[in-house]
Image (cartoon, rainbow, N blue to C red; front, side, top):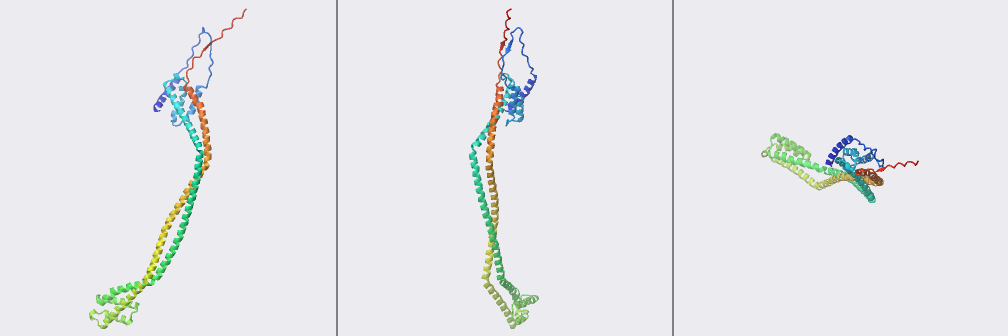
Amino acid sequence: FGSQLLRSATASSFLRGSSASMAPTKRPATTAAGPKTKKAKVAKGPSVAKQCKEISSAMKDAEGYPPVVVKMISENLAVCLGDYKEERHEFQASVASMAEKILASIKVSIEAKIKESEETLAKADIEKAAREAAVEETKKLAEDKTAVCAAAKQEFTTTEGELKKAQEELKIAEKEQKVGDAQSVKDETKKGKLENTINAVFVPCKEGALEKAAITKGISELQKLGKELDFDTALLTSLPSALQKDPASRGTFDNVVVTNVEDELQKRLAKLKETLAEAAPAREERASKVATCAAAVEALKAKLQSMEKASKDAVAAVKEADGKSKAAAKALKAFGPEIKATGKALKDAKESLEDFTAGAMTSFTELLNRTKPLPEPEVPAEAEAPAAAS
């Protein structure tokens, strides 16, 4: 088509120039000596200019061709088709050939529209049934998603209630643990303090392993602890004198005092250990209960988080399903008008094809195949009537 376009452009320039330079020629006059003749009458059809104008107007609807090309060819139709077929220059024939292809493409385009509309109408029942099925399907889907969403929200609400209850149970368990373990906590503190005093204060003082100042401080701590543990007052009073002496310098009384103090310390320590051992099972039970409640709370928190996501996903699914349902309903509602529009489009396309075929295409075919007519026959003039008899 590119080479034809180049040739057509050259032809266009050539044709415009030659058309302007062509001068009309006169038919030779009949000699006076010859007999007078009359031209046979020839039926006249539409003018070439009018037909070319009709063709040019139709070519504006051409698709797939550059508008400038269509314009160039349509503007030169009269120059090309105005001459008879056998008198056309090669360039004129080239332009006419391109015009023929453009007109053929217009016909093909109209016929394609007719075929498309006919196929659409032929499948109308199937399409309508499909859209009706889509409406029912999407409606059912929306209902299912709505039910799932409602269940997810209900489960979320239920889990929220379970979590609240579990948190209350955890608070109660922690309170019971705090109250139940209060005495044991105190006893553990006493036990730790007593063990530390025995090992870090009493034993070093007893063995004389501390400096005098440290021994004095340690004795003060032992007396204070002894008062807290209800030691005998006389025993506590005698303790400084006994511990301030070196172990080798202590007398019998001093050793008795030291031994009694040590015994009292060990008794108190053993008692605390016994008390703590007796309380241990109950403490373990309370601790286990707290751990169980805490685990239940964490599990429900995780479940609630999962339910929250599931609920949001369910809401999004409902929204999507509703959108599809509405779209399907809209498509079904539009089916009638669409079919009506397709019917009108088919009617218009058929009329357009009929008008195109009877009009522009017929005119082009006539002009394209128009040949030079045979010379007009000359008819002798009627002889003059003989002179009247005198």
